[in-house]
Image (cartoon, rainbow, N blue to C red; front, top):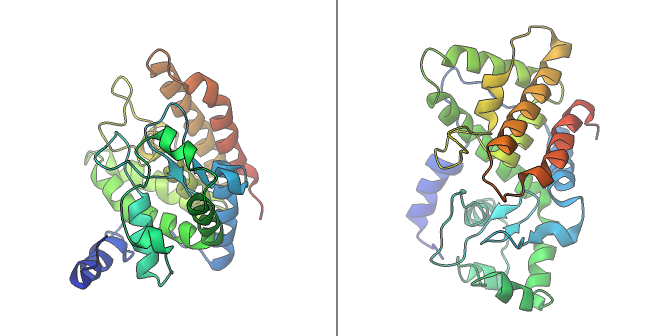
Length: 268
């Protein structure tokens, strides 16, 4: 557990405090949009079921927690995906949220593997964690929004100079239309920014950057979000085609495409 006040101040100033590079597209959400996003992500990630706020799939070496299915690695283990649950807890502390005593006492995952978690699945500790995650859904949503706001400048910086104006213009157009900000935030939470080299199959990524690269340019407002959805489906199909033999992509692609299709009809 990190208790150094100076570290928390620095974390807030440089990591948690929202900031956007000059010229980068901005994400602006009001309270109604935030509530709508919470419902959308909770539905997409957990089917709006409290039981799904903690999952540990048989084919994963880590559990996923909360409405965003934030990753928490066992002590001493690291994987190809970015660990986000400890960052969420620190964000909660900085925003005045009381943390469960056992969770506040240690930053380490209390289970070494899936079997040890399953043996503990009906314990008071797990039940208290699930209730805590259910009660803090809006704060988790604000954490997701904050991470996306911070990631967009990083995404644009990763784009080659010659390509950057077109990518930035497409992103700005998507953010300018109804449901566009919700689609961008949900997709990044779903499949990432697309800039991490270790998140590739056959050298090709599947994050927001790849969707923006796949998009055709259009200035017609009613065509922008449908084009984003089309591009996202293409990128997800490409991921499935590039996936290693024996992976679960082919079992999941239908649900993935249904998820992005729903961006066109989001209503809260």
